[in-house]
Image (cartoon, rainbow over all chains, first blue to last red):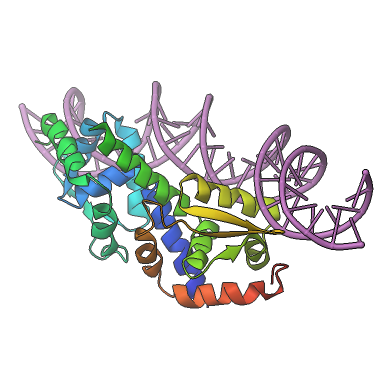
Length: 114
Length: 114
DNA sequence: ATATTATATAAGCGAATGGTTATATGGTCA
DNA sequence: TGACCATATAACCATTCGCTTATATAATAT
């Protein structure tokens, strides 16, 4: 009974978290491959703390996990997440998403991790 | 090019709008059948202006349309909306949604439109 | 006309959001 | 050790959110 209610609010929380252009784009990128924090700062032209705070929200709902390797931290969709299976559909529903993600990745060729 | 970007932000806007438990529940109810404003005030125990403002957001993104009949205004998902086809999937992805919507509808039996 | 009913809008308020700059953390390398 | 790098966190600020109360609007009904 209460579990149902919490399912609703958890799903609402997912949508809320995806309801930001930057985070939605990040998830779209991670839906294609693992990404480095510096990829995001590079291709969004966004400050490092801003990226870090967006990623924190994505980690907080369990959608994204982090892996550290030397200097860099790599982010990817967490296949343990209850939302994991929804992501490809949600992202796939965005018209022109493939071109958008292409363009974003082409912008982060200068990122320090590359 | 710019069109793609706007697709992203429009989709983000959709998620943001659905990222609220009340609005998500309203959409889940309308996904089953047309609803009256007073249904919502009744089953959410929410004030009339609060409901009205939530509905305005749903109408602003074109997801919901209104039909007036005498005293009452009836709301439903707008089949003209670019998001219309996504709704059943998005709602269907919420665990236990059917029971939740059942419970909500059972709460609005006292609504003035009935 | 006037009263009544459902709904919309306006104004105000506390809380949350998303950015900023400054600083802390923690791994790497000389 | 100490300097350096990527990332996280803290503190702050302007804007947005979601509610409230009060009032406006528009369709009945008497």
